[in-house]
Length: 148
Image 1 (tube, rainbow, N blue to C red):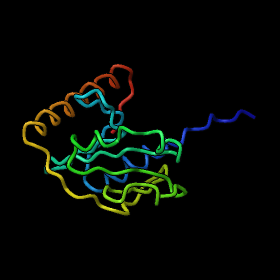
Image 2: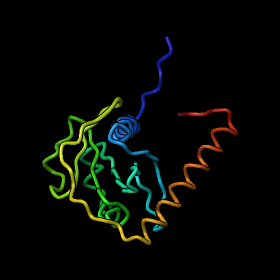
Image 3: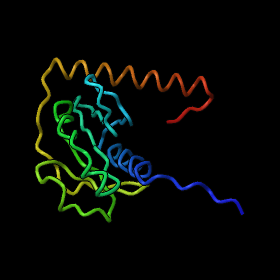
């Protein structure tokens, strides 16, 4: 019998977190390149034009080796860590948001403070978000794969 390859935990968390953010009124992109060349795991944009970034941590080692997460704060109104149910959340900073997720959805356990982006940065980020979404949709159409 052929076994399906194991799906990495980070990929499963990305799916669940994206679904959760969609349920909360955000349209999401994964692996979104910011202007400073950092790559947000998940970024969401809501109807008010507000941005949330979720940094996914699949393990304690993943969190402990990450010294760049604070650089994402300048690119969003709200920042969250997204982790699985078995992650020891007490090691995460208490002053940012927290989402617990699995492959099918998530739950926000802690909301972060709202830190309003400067208007110029918001405009540039909104444009980059729209262009990235359009490029990805076009690429999907060219390969015959269209997702809703």
